[in-house]
Image 1 (cartoon, rainbow, N blue to C red):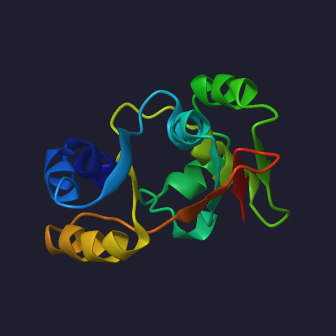
Image 2 (cartoon, rainbow, N blue to C red):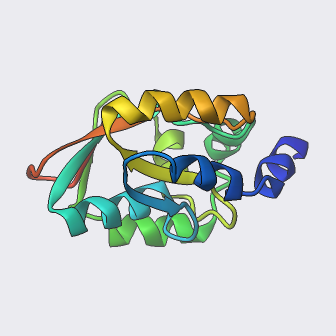
Amino acid sequence: MKDSVEVMSYLNKYASQIASKYNVHACTDITGFGFMGHLYEMVSSSHVSARVHHKEIPLIKGAKEFAGMGIIPSGAYRNRKYMEGKYLFGDFVEQNIKDIMFDPQTSGGLLISADKADAYKMISDLENIKTSCSIVGEVTKKQDYFIYVD
């Protein structure tokens, strides 16, 4: 619980200040629509698709275990229903990870789309301010689904 409170208390302000130094195409805070809903809004409005590497997504300590016990907010199921037909999960993505990706956060992190060259520099700057971050995927040309998760 302590880790969750710490993550939610840390303002996205610092990360957004760093991101503003780079060639960012889109940025959103992950809130009520969950990771998948916010990513869908980003890619669909740009007429592209995204490939997400689920093992690269930073998770709050314990999130995977709680999701595995079925402790999922009802909003996650509404988000998943809204997203039907817009995404495809690979065979090896565990159910608890799928649930987490639709989880409606009240204080989630930032989802940033940036040029590849800038992304690595931005990661370095974010790590310097002790912000949990990673490159979780890439944008691709528009395909059958808006989001592919492997």
